[in-house]
Amino acid sequence: MNLETLKQEVYEANMDLMNKKLVILTWGNVSGYDEERELMVIKPSGIPYSEMKPYQMVPVDLNGNIVDSTYVPSTDAPTHAELYKAFKDKGIKGIVHTHSQYATMWAQMGMDIPCYGTTHCDYFFGNIPCTRLMTTEEIEEDYEKNTGKVIIEAFKNIDCVEMQAVLVHSHAPFTWGRTAHDAVEHALILEYISKMALFDYLATQGKCPLVKDNIKMKHYNRKFGPNAYYGQHKQNTAIYRIKNEVNE
Ligand SMILES: [Zn+2]
Image (cartoon, rainbow, N blue to C red; front, top):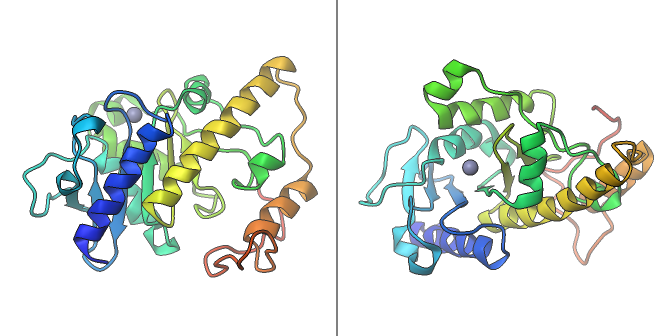
């Protein structure tokens, strides 16, 4: 992909965060990954959405070097870089970070988002994980990079394609997808699910039943499994594989 095209895509995805009311002020950031050049393009730091332009999107390699730009990348760039290093070979080419309210509430409680129903199952396979609390050393040195590392640690036994969202403990969510736009869509769906789950959780004093495993698999697989039958076209089954067993 042409680098200018990726900058345009990442710019539009960042603007979309504002349009979808997932961020306020300069919060949030979206990046997209260029496989050929092995670099990501990410939102510049501290520029208001109303003043942002496509050419200001910053190309950064996965070691943190800015490539041909005078703009400073988002402070969260090292987190994005860690995630691309771990997930890019599975087809993850877009990452989003927001502080969308309901997802952030779960992150602040330090809790996984329980899978209560099929709306959740349609997009995320199982409970949406919350990372462990970071240690003092991890916070004081290389905070953003270590944020990426604790996310990857949380995905040791979770497939990053089956679960394209995470909550960072005491912080907020990250989502990802096959493109920057996909990742934004997942951030929007995550927020919608987070709100419903919070109300379910509070209304039942934490006793809302988890969705049954067979319903969970049915809903996920009919959209993303090899025999997917939801929608007008077959899904890309190359990176989505059927779940034969539940691993939670
Ligand atoms: Zn943040």
